[in-house]
Amino acid sequence: MIFTPEKCSIRDQRMKPFIDPDELWKFINNTSSTRERIREIIAKSLSKARLTLEETAVLINASDPELIEEIKQGARTLKEKIYGNRIVLFAPLYVGNKCTNNCNYCGFRTGNKSAIRMTLSDEELIREVEALEDTGQKRLILVYGEHPDYSPEYIAHTVKVVYGVKKGNGEIRRVNINAAPLDIEGFRIVKESGIGTYQVFQETYHPEAYKWYHLGGKKRDYEYRLTSLDRAQEAGVDDVGIGALFGLYDWRFEVMSLVRHTNHFEACYDVGPHTVSFPRLQHASMIDMDKNYLVKDDEFVRLVAILRLAVPYTGMILTAREPVHVRREVMQFGVSQIDGGTKLELGTYSDKKEHNQDLNKEQFQINDSRSLNEIIDELLETGYLPSFCTSCYRMGRTGEHFMEFSVPGFIKRYCSPNAILTLSEYLSDYAPETTRQKGWQIIEKDLADLEKHHQDVDEIRRRIERIKQGERDLYF
Ligand code: SAM
Ligand code: SF4
Image (cartoon, rainbow, N blue to C red; front, side, top):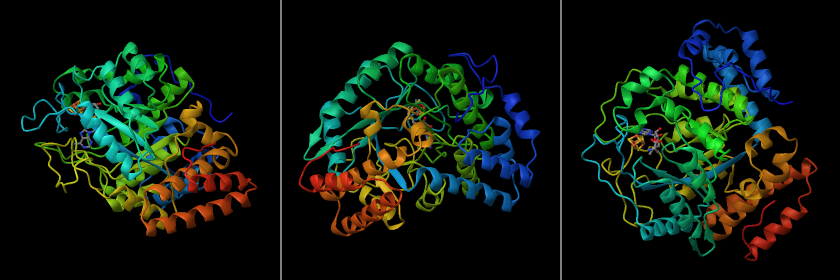
């Protein structure tokens, strides 16, 4: 048994709120961190068990720099031992920024009268997807404001449009969604369009703090949002992404809550979230935020390492909100997916003009605006294996992160070979010569590693040859 779902309490009923702020604060305030205890907890995580709330609080309370270093080292070891050097790449695609909510941290809020509103037409959407395919993207997350125009039927329609766009060897093989919470029927409709993950971030899990920021619209209802991914599960969307917007409330409380949310899913659905996101608040048009809870770089690095250890089987997403140096650092702690070549202004992937960031057209400011190839090149330079794999989802192997983590040999049988094959496609179709050379070198190194671990690499080599001859979309 890899984990024992904690039947946390009576509150773990499907579609019932599960956050008790007093309980979480009690853990934070009454837990002390000794070196022995921290080592025990890291060892538990390395033995592939999800941490309890009490154990997470012990890690959170470690303030001695040496202990923090041990926690970071633990997260690094977990990443290396279990997940290896793959990083999955994706791009966000903003479909529409009309919004009836008034979240005071977001450039799209109703109160921001200087925001320029638009929704991509089907033709514009197709042009954007073609432009993304031309750079080599295979995985997108579609993003929408909350508005009656963006009904489940409309979201499902845009997903189908995106899957239908094929340009050259390009195609989108996995569409994820970040949109407003839906009711069960709405989730069913969107699921039928063939989505991968449905993400809803709670923003802040603290019910009082939630009220400070959500000043109008449906999103004011904390509980409706908190239980949204339960409704997704009820509708059969078992691939869900949770997240908190760090900077709205005490980061320690949010980390505890993300673990609590994970426990809740395990208790109710016997499955954890597919991914956890930890965006940090960025500057946006006309926002004037309280700076009390902003998370400093060193705290951010700590919290990513703690999350890695606390929920060791969950995919972790890091976005271009973060500057390059922070991305480089936290990637070592088990981030599994990053975006590349990101543009947040609607309609600009297909626009060849250079764009300076214009906050009236964007949800918030990003800090890493490098192209997809620049990011891939750097990943290769630093020994990572960039991957566009979408295999598990298409083979019906849901819960892939959990399988990667728990099924011995899964990564060597599926994830690494598929990363190699999708990188081979990228190198053949989109990479400039210098990146191509680095890419084939990493592939050779990874094949040699697989061989060392008794993995039969002949079939992978045969498939690479087939890709070089022009075949596409080969996977295990
Ligand atoms: N409108 C939907 C919603 O609110 O759930 C969907 C997507 S919203 C466009 C995506 C996420 O962006 C939000 O959940 C929030 O966490 C994040 N976000 C909003 N404003 C931000 C800011 N100023 N800095 C960083 N992230 C922000
Ligand atoms: Fe609208 Fe989402 Fe922005 Fe809130 S975070 S204003 S719901 S787009």
